[in-house]
Image (cartoon, rainbow, N blue to C red):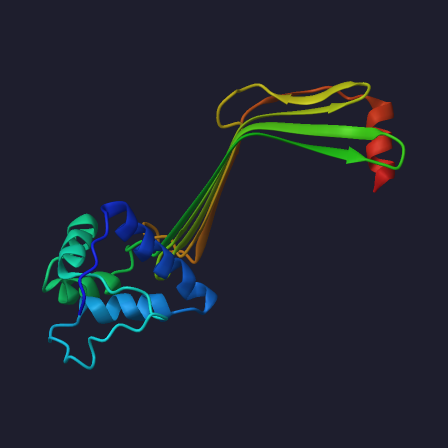
Length: 199
C-alpha cells in the first residue's frame, strides 16, 4: 500500500466528507475509510497496484492522527457498545441560531402586518428513546402600517418552549413547558380587521 500524507485539515475533511455522503446513499468513501482503519495485513504486490479511479488510502500515520483527534483508543469497541445501550447517550444534535428575522403579511395591495424577532434559538436533541425540542425567542415586535400592535417587554427569553418525548427525569410519556414574558399590546381596530379579513 502506498502511503499518502494528509495534513490534519485534509484528514478531517476526508472523514467529514465520507460521513456526510452516507445518509445520501453513497457509502463508498465510508467503506474505504473503515477498510483502511481495520486493515492489518500487508498487501500483495498485485493488490498494491494503484487503481487511478480509486481515491488514495490513509497511511497508518494518518489513522493514528485521526484516532488522536477523535479520541479513539484500541479496545474501546466494547465500551462503545455498552455506552450505546444507555438511554442518555446523545445520538443527534441540531442547533439553529437566528440573530434577526422578519416576516410580512401582505395582500395584493399592501403590507398588513410585519413580525420581527431577535435571537431565535432552536435546539433538537435526539437520544435512543428521548427526543428534546427546545425553542427560545429573545424578543419580538408585531406592527402594522397604522402602528405598533405588540411588543415583548423583555429582550431575553420572551417566549420559551420545551417539548420532551420520553424524558429521563420523570416517568411520563412526554412533557411540555411553555413560558411567555409580559408584552405590550395595542388594539388598533382597523389593523386587526384587515388582518382577520385576510384569512
